[in-house]
Length: 99
Image (cartoon, rainbow, N blue to C red; front, side, top):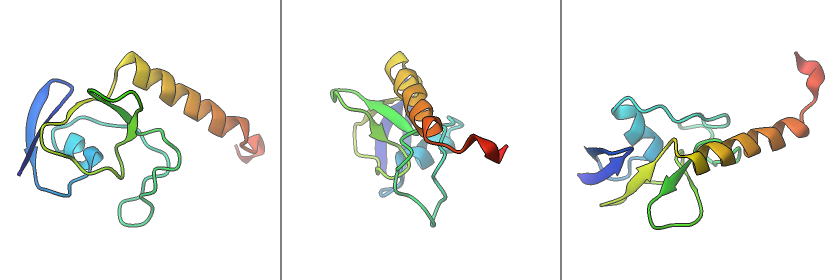
């Protein structure tokens, strides 16, 4: 088992569990656009980014496995800002006629 903290909640999950799966197991929802378990786990949209304590760069939750002692934040101001920017960039290149 791997012990980590997500948004102040200490949890234990099996090894090789992704951050997204770990968060979902305790009811924490992390948004995603491109993630389809078992089909597409490449983190291309970068909407599922989370903040890892001690790191400057955000990491994707859909394809990064949990590690012992991780302290993660899924809804910090930095995370929300980067997610917003990533969605804006995706939409700026999107064909708006699909609706």
